[in-house]
Image 1 (cartoon, helix red, strand yellow):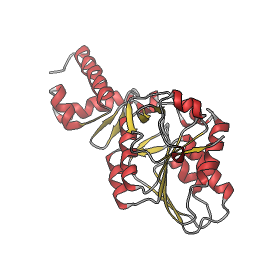
Image 2 (image 1 turned 180 degrees about the horizontal axis):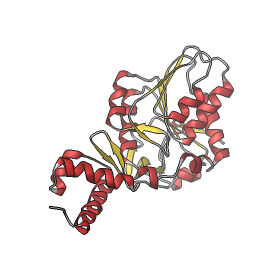
Image 3 (image 1 turned 45 degrees about the horizontal axis):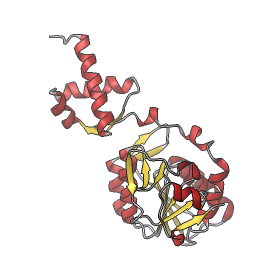
Length: 261
């Protein structure tokens, strides 16, 4: 018997609400919460994804991160001068030899560009990234050993995330990791999506040194998902003034802050 359309629409709206709340839901959990079969759950996911409200993944779905989060083009134009200064300071912290991780944010993309300008030959350096933009920028660099982690592709950000990407990190140990963030407040670093925050937490566990690269516009801003508190943070590279950091409740020691003024 065909289910009336208004019932299907109500179920789709509930599915969207569940995924927005949880960030990610596997098919089995969708079946449990909605009381539907796996075939129905997959059909519902396909219909909701076709309308751009979620991102399908292997075995489930992500929240509408691709449509609600600003695209790379939109974000790359923000605070461009500050990002350039942060990138120049960050490149000074990249070892000549060893293995480093570069994040997918636009500030870390600026780090990749600055690295190319600063060093003609990258022999002895291995870079691992989950950003297709970073991989494209560095793909032709002389001597560089470049690796891209697999995962669920989010097209507006050109980033690979999810459980597969986290599992791929287990094969690596990093001498240094360079990460971005959306918020910088009294509690530490935050991001707007749980998949991104979970991935960055996994990177933290694999890195001997961690550098968060955030411009002053992030100071005092808090987004829903916390990546690291100040007690676990390595070094902050920022153009924010001491007064701005104090106002945001940041309590790092001077040794933990690299000024990009």
